[in-house]
Length: 243
Image (cartoon, rainbow, N blue to C red; front, side, top):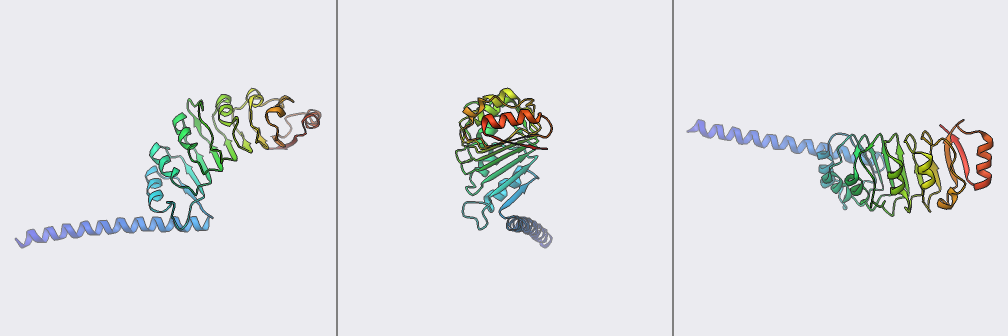
C-alpha cells in the first residue's frame, strides 16, 4: 500500500516539475521577446513556426501590451489563416515584412485585411496563382515593396491601382513595361523599377496615371543619357540611376 501511494506521489511530483519547467521556458521566451522588442524599437522577428507567433500574440502582443509591436518580420513560415488572424489583432503593427513565403489569393486577402498597416514588404516570395482580383490594399498603406518576388504584371496592377500607396518598389521582379504603362496610382510619388524586365522607359502618357510621381529609380547604365534627359524634360519626373 505504501509503495502504491509512493508511486502516485512520484508521478504527481514529476508532472508538477514538468509543468514548472514549461512555465519557466515560456516565461524566458516572453522575457527574451520583451527585451528584443525594447532593444529593437518595437520590432520582432518570427523564424520558427506559426505556433510561436500565436503564443506570443496572445500572451504578449495584445492591444493592451506594455511593449506594443510596431514591426513584424516573418521568415519562411507558412502563413496560415490562424496565424494571420492573430496578427490582425495587433492594432499597433505598422510594418509587416514577409520573407520566403508562398502567397495565394486567400493569404493576400487576409494580409490586406490588416487595417493598421503603413508598410508591407515581400521578399523572396512566390505568388502562387495569385490574381489579386477583388482585393484592395489597406487605405492606411503608404509603402509597398516587392524584392526578388515571382509575381505577374496583372497581379501588381490589380493590387496597386487606385490605392493610396506613395512608394512602390518592384526590385528584382518580372514586372514589364506593359504593366508599368497600365499602373493607375494617383498617390504614387516614388517608384523603383530596378532589376525588373522593364527594358524601356515608360510612355510619356504614364504621368496621366501617376500624376504625383516625382522620383523614378532605374538601373544604372541601362538607358542612354539622352533618353533619360528627354524623359525628364517631358514629364518633370526625376530619374535616379542606381543598382
